[in-house]
Length: 228
Image (cartoon, rainbow, N blue to C red; front, top):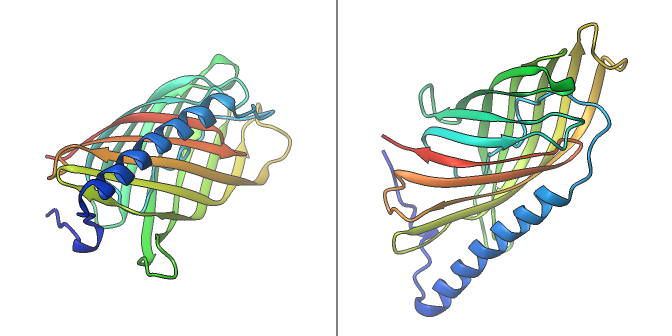
């Protein structure tokens, strides 16, 4: 059942609308610049967890995304699907298919986990959640990944318009298996992610979602989350 937290309602007339519009435009522009300007990594396979798409307020329902893994050493575009709310609070299934390293097709899937850590205060004006998960990408070789990190963000609402930008930072533990896999079987990578959810429906039955992964895990995705 959808609940509207009174703390996230920003009803201060023109000033609130101006700040909300500025946050929306700035978030989208920043993500577009980062997605197009980040350098490529040397070697990679399609990563199931990148981009994380895990802010401090995760929309429930079925998500469908266009994803570009092209920054990851020759990986290409693909489709990412998520399902939030089917199992329990703080759990999300995700999976998809993309062009993997060397032009081979690659499937991927996993389970996202998150738990709230702190609500925003006057001293810390953002919410913080802990994130993790486990999943597999399989194409030219097999990549088993366990991400661990934190997301910080803040949800704002003005009338029917809701926006929830966030930044995520953490590490990913990788196990690379197979004859075609790189020599370093086990590695630890840095994962940074920027994203935003936007809805123009007060019930949030339709949410536009976009995210860009940076650091050692580079990819971007944009799509819709539909709540029945």
